[in-house]
Each structure stands twice: as structure tokens, then as C-alpha cells.
Amino acid sequence: MRIPWSGNTGNFLQTLTTFLAFVLTEVQGKEQERHSEQEPRLQTLPHPELVHPVRVDHLGRFLSHDVSHRARRDLAAEREVYYRLSHRGGQLHFNLTVNRALLAPGFVAERRYGGMKGAAISRLSLPDCHFIGRVQAPETGLAAISTCQGL
Image (tube, rainbow, N blue to C red; front, top):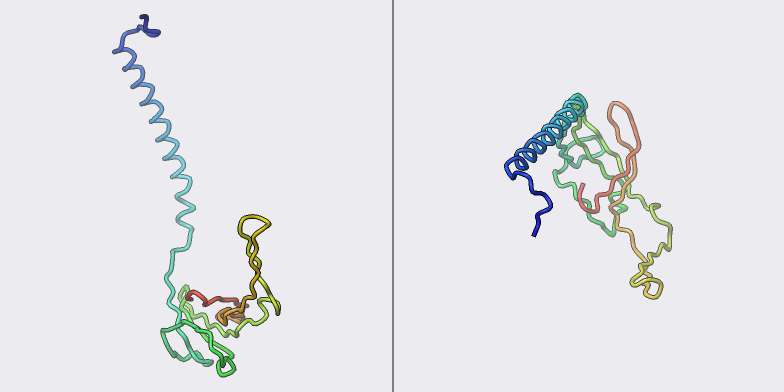
């Protein structure tokens, strides 16, 4: 039986090692080049900031650290909710009301199982955890917040 490559095994391993060293050097050089290009961009990114919202009254006075908003039958007693959080050294004050216009009256959801044959249609009642309103900081802006799964 004849071996297709009958050269010296030592030379082959030396050539292969040299080739792999060259490839690794090229790859490492390109990685370092890519990192050096990204470094200035990384330095301009804002630092991540943890925010801790609190519930306040209409004057911004602290009420509670509990910011969960559970659906209640008598929301007339609580038409507006107020939150405050510190952000970038300033205070953001949210004045919010329940968004009852998020979905149209009579909204239905259709879920399909197994293609066109299996469908389930259900009426959904929207929980009172979607809010719209204003955020007040140095400037005033619009806000839309969902507290359905936390704030």
C-alpha cells in the first residue's frame, strides 16, 4: 500500500506548526485591532445606572417603596398614580392615569393551534396596569408605563 504523501513527518509537522502560528498571529492581530477601534466608543457610552422608583402623592411626597399596582374594582378612588425615581442626578416625577383606551371595546384575541383548523377566540379584559400621563423633570414629556409585571 502506498501512502499518498510520503514526505518527512518531521518537516510536515514543522510546516503545519509554522502555518498555525501564522494564522493565530493574524487572528490575534485582527482581534486587537478590533478592540482598539471599539475602545473609544466604549468610553463614550453612558454608565449603567440602577434606578429605584417610589410611590409618591400628587405633591411628590413619599408614600411607599411598594410600586406594584394591583387592579382594583374601585379605581375611581385612585384615578391617578404618582411615581418618582432618581435618574442621572435628577428626579423624574410621573403623573399617570389608567389607559382605558389601549384596546378597543369588544377586543378579542384569536389563537391558532395546528394551522387553520384549530382556533380559540377569547375576549380579554385588560388589567388596570397600563398607564399614560406625563413625566416632569426639568422638562415635561409624555409617559406610557406598564406595571403588569413590576415597574
